[in-house]
Amino acid sequence: MEKRYAIGVDYGTESGRALLVDIATGEEVATHVTPYPHGVIDETLPGTGRKLEHDWALQHPEDYLEVLRRSIPEVLRASGVSPERVIGIGIDFTACTMMPLDAAGTPLCLVGNWKDNPHSWVKLWKHHAAQEEANLINAKAGERGELFLARYGGRLSSEWMLPKALQILNEAPDIYAEADCFMEAADWVIMQMTGSFVRSSCTAGYKGTWHKRDGFPSDAFLASLDERFKDFATEKLRGPILPLGAKAGELNEQMAALTGLEPGTAVAVGNVDAHAMVPAVGVVTPGKLVLAMGTSTCHLLLSDKEVHAEGIAGVVEDGIVAGYYGYEAGQSAVGDIFAWYVNESVPAYVQQHAKEEGIGVHEWLERRAAQQKPGESGLLALDWWNGNRSVLMDSDLTGVMVGMTLQTKPEEIYRALLEATAFGTRKIIEAFQDGGVQVDELYACGGLPQRNRLLMQIYADVTGREIRIADSTQTAALGAAMFGAVAAGVEAGGYDSVADAAKNMARVREESFKPMAKNVETYNALYEEYVKLHDYFGRGGNDIMKRLKALKSG
Ligand SMILES: Nc1ncnc2c1ncn2[C@@H]1O[C@H](COP(=O)(O)OP(=O)(O)O)[C@@H](O)[C@H]1O
Ligand SMILES: O=C(CO)[C@H](O)[C@H](O)COP(=O)(O)O
Image 1: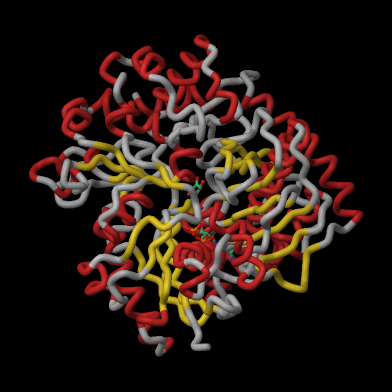
Image 2: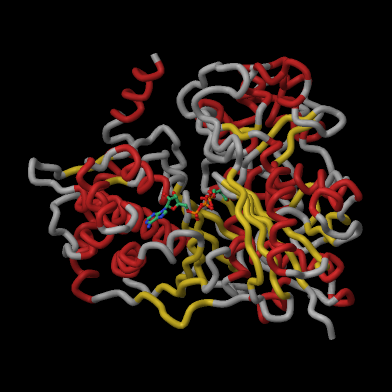
């Protein structure tokens, strides 16, 4: 039988990439990355020069279509695969990455003069300027005993849909009123590809506070936040919500012309980037925690029971793999913290040495840092450079580094930052375990595990567990392609379920990272100190981070 292929498109923070995969084997035949022409918009609004406030992060919706326009023809060209052999497409996206649309489905930032107001643009997942709204939602939901709150670890993140939309209502009521609806970028791109106005159970569940049986938070609750917000769910989040693995529709003529694919190709319901990675590392059963490590880290776990505990950013039935409760927790910055250090803080001599040795600054720092023993630098950091998403759910928290002296070296700081993120992950694992959700095995995927061996050894040592690594550098795109194959269905040469797709298409590497006993011991001691710092700054011992932030905002 002739080979069949699927394409996965992974929409990350800085770029989107397409991956063409052999459906029978999971072989990754061709890949292409398109950097977003406008990148992350966090300083000035395009075309206006208007300065954005602290904690804003926007994107340009046309950049998403640019990824389809450039990367799909390129994977077809590079692979030589003819379009009719591509039977399904799936996409995954950062989330909650949301936008207001007009009645024709056009983002308001592309309509008339709305572009001059930053609230008309796409709010990227890491837009952190809705913390006040998140605080209000959490306080009101707590007072009213709203049941939904427990499914989100007792606190909604400011990154999620409700706080972001409420911020628009508060600061730009005209845009809120003008918006016919709000949509996750994942669902919007699917609408562009197929013409189908459908939402994904994954984006709706984790980011939109939707529940399979209870639906969205009630009108009464929404009205308690602001009378004008009463109809938010029924009107502005309206539309059918389809489960993962379902077909959203078929590629329309316009998108077929844009991408070079056949009209009628099956298109899967949109997925979230981290969630798509779970089946792509072969995880389709409970107890295996997947660390999706990139700009941020998401921690994903399947279970056959629903429990509510602090530290769980969301639990959604069928939210990752049908038939299980899917749990998510996360750290809002991981790779981004290392990027901050490399881009903003290393001395010129480090860059010079790296250049002379023909390696990148990350690699140079990693090599030096690998020569140190745990605890040797006397440094300890908190991993809150972009707030805390689990377990404290507070984007007003900031970074800390304790123990610096005149002798402190850049590689020591780099290592302390790697360790801080590992401690943050251990805290999350403990939160799952303490909450009664079993974690038996660890799997790592995303951009970081393949790039930084020291980081992975530190994670094994800090958690005291073996870590298996995905065999793909494009795990999210592979997962998206798997869902594309499921949308196409077994009759077209695809699969009936993502579990079946995972049997043939998912892979982990032979090599794993195992904890080293001596390191584990030192890290246990350092972790105790981390927990003390964490609770002191994060649980009200000293609110200095919030006071400083308030001063900064003026
Ligand atoms: N060698 C490295 N060591 C540690 N972090 C790195 C290294 N190379 C790149 N990074 C970080 O990895 C992150 C990108 O991860 P990736 O998974 O590719 O992207 P995304 O999360 O946007 O999909 C960036 O934050 C970057 O700074
Ligand atoms: O919250 C998310 C998933 O649930 C975001 O999409 C994620 O944190 C951003 O992903 P990345 O670090 O891969 O850019």
